[in-house]
Image (tube, rainbow, N blue to C red; front, side, top):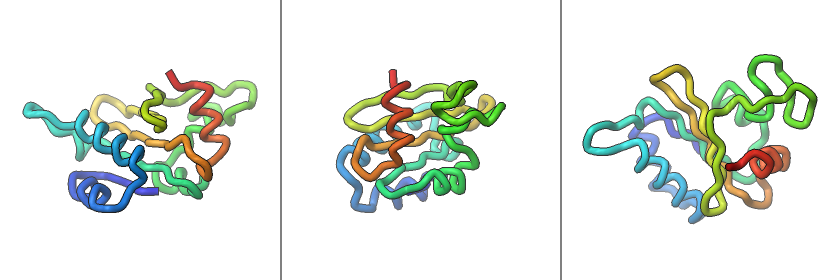
Length: 130
């Protein structure tokens, strides 16, 4: 997993060799965060999920899992599960899961639809993607 917390870590991530679809998704996400009027890069965490990442990696980096309903703790596929994110979309072979916290902070997970990515996470994304 590649974690981006600010402009400096975004620059480091872009300097890495990334799978082309994931690079395109990251560049698009960063473009959404910046304009002449604003730069929200320092107020948004972006996590690039990679093949081989485990759910424990997501928990460690974000403090939550999209596979677990945040209030009652129901897991995806269990009774009572309700999505805890604000938006889940798919574009160019990458899922984008957006969580907002109040009016000043967001976390974005970019999940490639690729072999080796956590199967339960891909199932969740394919089920809920708009």
